[in-house]
Image (tube, rainbow, N blue to C red):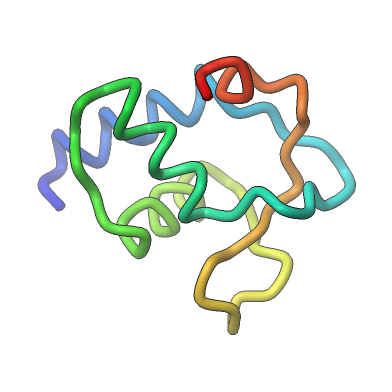
Length: 82
């Protein structure tokens, strides 16, 4: 991913995902990256989205899982973009 695309992705995360203290089960990195793609029209891989989440300060619940879950609020703007 280019630096510009990473900045776009991290900016989207900052504006559309709100952290919380407890895990948000059932909404994985794969699901979130599809919401990102629908909103921006920019294709990225699941691994690229996971990297952007890490750089944005989010820690996966289980980093050994293929699709990571994070502590994100269901009140995050991304949930209205379905």
